[in-house]
Length: 97
Image (tube, rainbow, N blue to C red):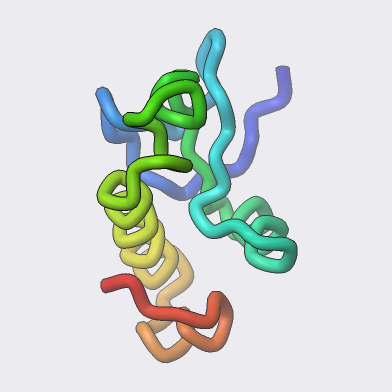
């Protein structure tokens, strides 16, 4: 299986930065344009199904968890690409920090 580009830090038990058996890929920023940017920029995480969309704890139903991922993704994007918050807002439309 081809490894997917991911710049996120590994953060078990919440998410992993590599696909694992049974995992679901989650794009940190979604919507038509932002989903593609997330994939291109490596802002994806790999979740257990119940932390993705298979329970109320999942990122698609748990705003606190969703914001936790978005904040970490914004920090990593800024660090990895040597950018700042204003650059992030230009690219993704919103600041989550």
